[in-house]
Every structure is written in C-alpha cells, then in structure tokens.
Image 1 (cartoon, rainbow, N blue to C red):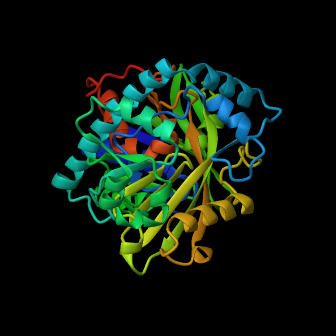
Image 2 (image 1 turned 45 degrees about the vertical axis):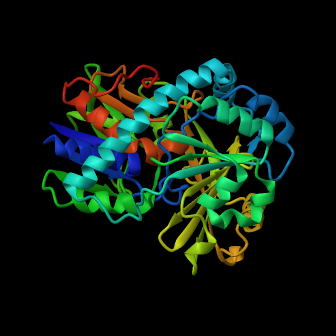
Length: 421
C-alpha cells in the first residue's frame, strides 16, 4: 500500500519507519525545511518509561489557580475567548480525579513499556543508535515532605522503583549537593533512559532514505484533504514555490501535532487537542561531574534535567492559553526563560554559564486526559497518531508500531483501551 503521513516530527518519522519495516511505500510530508523542527527539536530528552502520570490529577486545578499570577509558576493558565479552549479545560477538570489519573496512568504505562521494547528492538536489530542514548535511570526528587510521602506510598508495590532518603539521593547523584539540604527524598527508576529527540529524528531519516519505498517531501504544506465516496482520495499541497499540487493516496496518517487540528476539522473530525507550551535550555557542559548523570525531575518545581553527551537539557513549565497557542511555532517568553535560567542555576550552579544556554519553546499537543489518540478515524482510510503531550519521544516507537499493525490489518500488540480518543 501507498501510505502518506503528514508530520515530520518524532511521531510521523517513527510511524514511517514502522510502516516501511512492514513493506509499505511511504510518503512523508513536512512543511518545514527539515524534520524534527517543531515540538521534537529541543524537548526534555528524557525517555521516561515508568514515570508517566498525566498532568490532570486531583489538586491540580487549585494549584493552577494559586499559580495564575506568578511569573515562575510551573503551570500557568490564561483564559481565552475560545470555545475550543474551554471545552478542553472542562474535560481536563473532569479528568482531575485520583481514580481517573490512575486509570489513564495505567494506559500510558502500558504503551510506554511497549514503546521501550520497540526502541530496543530497533537498536539491537536495525542498528538505530548514535542519538545521545544512555540507559541512565531517572530520579524524581521531592522538596515537599507531603508530596514525597504520597509518591512513596504510590510505588511501594513496584519492584522497579526505589524510595530514597536524602542521603541516598545524594549518594546516587552527587551533583545534587547544592540542593541536598532542601530534599525530602526521591524515587529512582533504573529502567528509564535518555536521548536527543531531534538527533533521533535525523537518524531515523537516514535509515528511511536508504529504502527506495520512502519519499520525503520537505517544504510541502497540506492545505486540504480531499474525500471521495467517504474516504481520502488525495491531498492538496502548497509547495515552497507557492504552486498547488495534488497527491493521490491509498491511506493517510495524520501525525502533525497541533497542525493536525485544522486539517481534521476540515473533514469533520474533531479531536480534543490543545497546545501545552513548554520551554527548555540547552547548556554546553565542560565537566560532566557538575550535572546529573541520571535523569532528574524536580517534582515540586516541575523541572526536568537530562545530560545529552556534553550538554545539559533543562525543560519545564506548562502554559495553557499562551498568546501564540494558535501558531505553528511557539515564541520565546523572556520572563519564563529568565525564571528557568535562575532556577536551573540555583540547583546546579557549577554546570556552566546559564546566560549562554540556548533557549527554546515548543507546543506540546495534548489531550485533556493526557492519553494519545492512536488508530482509525471515522473516515475509512484516515488514521490518527496524535496527542502525546510531553511524552512524544517516550511513546513514539510504541505508538508507531501499534498503528503500523492496525494499518496492516493485524491485531494491536497491546490493548488499546484508553488510547483511541
């Protein structure tokens, strides 16, 4: 079959790779001049397979209200005159219950662990390496004792996660010395990993371009999905020259993050996606002993740290209703970046000159419940791979393999309960 994919980020590229491995012909359309240029470009870098709790949880709405007017708040909400925003927020509020969070967390965990197994298979049997990958584990540190006790109670039955007191946190991760006096404890997951998502996209593309059944269409913006007899017949494309072209397809996968919204709306498919804007810094590091070897998540400040070879990636913050929410690309917010620099420098002051760190902002395409939408749509030959939020890199390989199986008329390798919108 000839399958067209819209979206050249980590979700679209992994989907292309899984389909090529099943023998299909794939045409990948990306409106930018290269792949991995939007949400995949400078994300947190953590392959966080066991720590996949959705944002929607009990207590989050009250926290968000308290944070609303704080410049350095981990979560900032800006209401807009938008029915789409309010509908999404209403569903988010409904999901902010402990029982619902646990349910959706279980769905994410199932997909995440499967995704890890697929990535390992591609590494072992396909030689897909060299993207700053390490199996380095993850430590979630807690400054608030109540939050730490709650987390410790939740993972008691999980043999793959360890509860650490402050001394054990410091012994496992000496670079935490500057925050040691503020620690209540930590949770360590040995199975988590790290990698450079944008570099992973480039490595996937190199592999794909070695296959004659793969064609990359850069600088090609899809302006219309054309239907005929209840299914997708062709795509209308605007090339960089400004000329319009038509491209016939057998199957279509929409994996364009927030860019998917308008395309799907035009064919009557409503998906509950909203952009959660986040920020990151990338800091060159001369001495790696000054930064964490493990992935570190500062739970109370909602900041993640990941060492990518000789760089430290710092990522944080969720802006709901940012002024650029309707744009294709996120704009930097000077205040948010300054706050992130200050907090990162306070935690790891010897890592380097944070004023020289490269800032970035991205729009994470999220569903209210935090679970992605993978599978068939209401249109016969149109498929969806959307809504991975901040877990796109973590969930990409598994989501791609699931969708490739479904398109190939095979049974899903994992139950899809809670993962189909």
